[in-house]
Image (tube, rainbow, N blue to C red; front, side, top):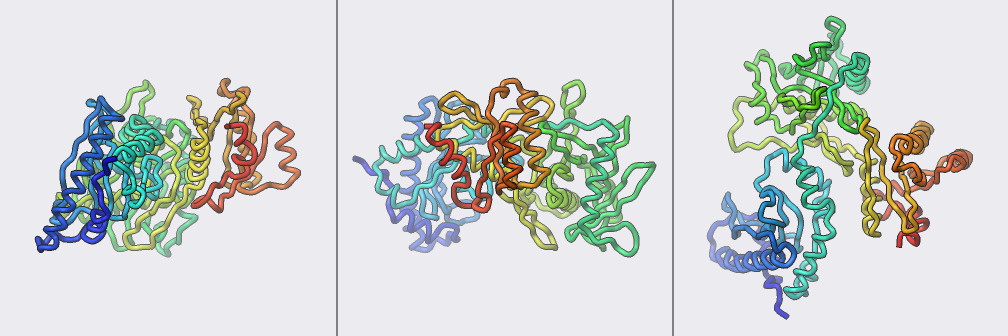
Length: 506
């Protein structure tokens, strides 16, 4: 059988020269020529894969052994599109890498910054663990024939989740939120935001200025509404003012409270910044170009979407640390937008948080400019993804569904015997979490009749008191625990999946 065209020398040369400057030394010229052969093998791999798996598609690419900046590329790369009219911005790619691996994945190509940001969040903290990346060690790939490599590639593509079209939708859809108009809710969320900041800060001796270690703010009451100014440091200029929405003329406000379709609340602001003692202010167009933040849109009461562009100041339904961190992210974006000496080649930093319409896991880094960085963990999302992955490996379709009023289940799946399993996941076993879970497991089937006959399961990170477990089970809810301490490593649902469900699933 014909081999794939790749050799160990190709990997060795990538490991030696990848990312290094191209100086046209004799040894580099030889390396460039040999890596050109690796690129031809990559191109051939892509074309054969496209012909067999995507006969209506096409393969495209260019031989870039030396990339702009006059450096050796650390990998080879060729694109495969599933059909002729597929969006250019999302592609399957194949190639080999200086890490010593064959790679096949879905990746972006010439994408907007917002699209790339959403793609990176879909990947999670480690690219190689993304559900639409597959990595094959060099020694295994080199032992394959050309046909075996293509068959392996097709098998991996067929396992990718989400699908190509679903991933494209997720990374290109601008989240659409609904503005909150109720005055009681508005007061609650603005007060919540200020309370979270103040409770985790040190009050200055002069006025209402408070430092959180990442930014400072001054908050006051004006005509019964909160008014806040924010800056990065005590000796820096005020960067942005955020005032509580004034009803009924909220359309003229620069800040609003909005919710997504799951009921999560956000403090939003427009990108227009007023002048301060150092600059003349910033237009919304300039803010969009310089800040690096992805935008969201607001839906009007009549169902149409506003033309205005909004940005997340704080994710108010998240934990306190994330509320503070998203606020800091917005303040830094305002500082960047006010910088007059940015060059056209400078790229804004990738945001660490943005609104998503899917369950997000992993951890993400809040990058500080002059203070310590902090890592924020999305434990519920991590646990959910572990369960989804394990069930998917068993061929079980674990899905979320959502009521139009914003109530969303953690997931439901069907067993071989026809029974439906409704899951509620909690990341602590406190009384309040258990109270909420029991209520949710009875509320959801009442709101969504298709769940009426589902068996109810509660998954907790540790077992509550036996008396509590018995009381929950007397209500018709099965209680299982998962190994939350192993969320970064092994199967955390051994008891629930392997002990209780595997035989029924198979």
